[in-house]
Image (cartoon, rainbow, N blue to C red):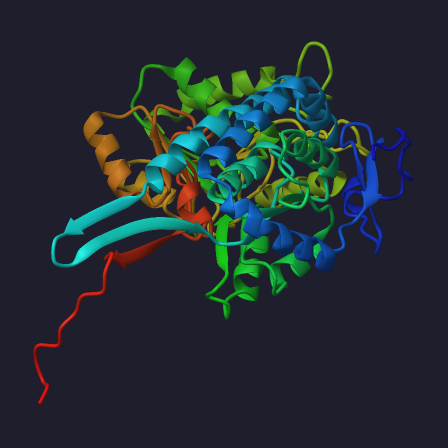
Length: 489
């Protein structure tokens, strides 16, 4: 389905073209060049769900060991296609090639982690009693689950739902982001070549309309979503009257990073730049707000700005390799530029200006702005390379500023004593709390999720097994045995 590399009309934004969904066709374009990447038909919603429902019982009846072995075969197929998949991710979402290769490695690594997690989190248990028989706890799959993938990690974050769901015995309908269908198609083909039926793991491209239709479909038993808070809230609202449907939401964050007393300024600056600008700031765990002790402010910001000035931003296959690629499309670049100007005109002071070298392409430089003087700071997720800085005078104020958000995904303390980190950990509202580590790059062997507008208490990562299967308690005896000892004539 890969199309020719034709350029879109210059008057149309890449985002509009990426979201081009007619009744029959979806098209995606490279952010870095505007060239067409992929063109293909959108999924037939009813037929896709019907196929999944027909295929699910046989898949669920397979021994767990068989499903796990097929996942390992899938990992081997990804290894065979690793360079092809990495190159497509780099083209389709603008990610530097080195980072796209790292994403493919995460797809492969997720398989063994998911197998271990399922064995640990859903282990069968039995409690024996001579008179009461056996109380057993086992787990069952939900049925047909829809996975709605994001664009920023089109393979890894979708895969983080798909693999645990398949291990548990669910059939999966995978709708990738409308901005990354080509990457999703390569991933799906790896599952199919591994021996997993195309009806059990279906590739279902489409745009927002198709995603909404899958969410609302009566034949779907659950929705596993990674993406923006606005879309997650819409899904939650749409299914509010359907407690029978599983909903797992992994959304964004307005993540704080607090810098306290530390002599390691060079290391602190590296952690800050990694957290704020990796993946061009397009990570849900990216640091959006830097909270700095006033006595350290000048020294810290001097180091951070000097390092940010060295960051290379460019196209995915450029040499030397860039640290940052473009943001996903022109509309995103326009919105981030407007947001930076808003902060600047409402009390912000630019430390490093946001620069857009090409008006028709979505390349942006790293940007840093001091918003300490702003009275009403917008509590929004600016999904791009903009870091807001706030100076504070004491540790309680730092914690209060860290918590001044409706989100609650990731937070990190740089510097400080063990006692201060204990206070930070105990009082900061976030699902990921780090010390002297970046906010990004959570471990596959740990839960990944947040609170507030960042999630609905169903963390993915190692804990994905918890929502991919449900526990069933069974009281069991080989022969019926019962008496009624009270209240009989």
